[in-house]
Amino acid sequence: MSYDDIDQPPHFGNPFAEQRALAAGRTDIPIGQWAYDALRIERGTPKTDAEKQPPKGQHLVFLHLDGTEQELPPPGSSIFTEADQIGTVTSSAWHYELGPIALALIADEIPETAPLIVHAETDGHLTLIAASQTAI
View 1 (cartoon, helix red, strand yellow):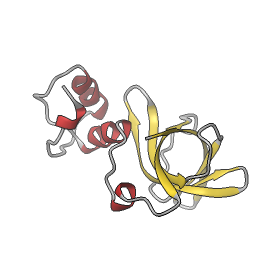
View 2 (cartoon, helix red, strand yellow; view 1 turned 120 degrees about the horizontal axis):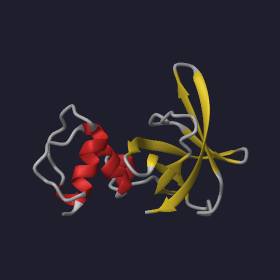
View 3 (tube, helix red, strand yellow; view 1 turned 135 degrees about the horizontal axis):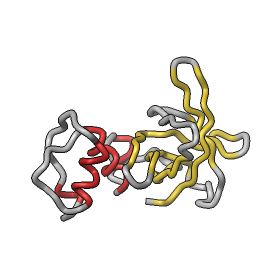
């Protein structure tokens, strides 16, 4: 089974159980939005127009997020390397094996090995989340 075969409408269920069942090759279960988004992000599939057609000077990357804070960055969260803002989170999710993951648009000149910090702001509270990137 390929994750590209996943096109069922979302429902409310256990996203981690759904992801494990899909990874095991089961196609007879409905899939919820959380599970769908986690698998979409894992495979690097763009969802928004910005992800599909990145602005000049930016490209789409997969982010592995540090799960220590137990918080996902919302779309629009800024990404920094040292003191410079170099990108923006476009989507994030909890994956059943990988933990917190995200897609982001970052500047073309940023090396893949650069340490990244995501500034996730929720309800006026700023959380700093360490991240590493993988090119898509």
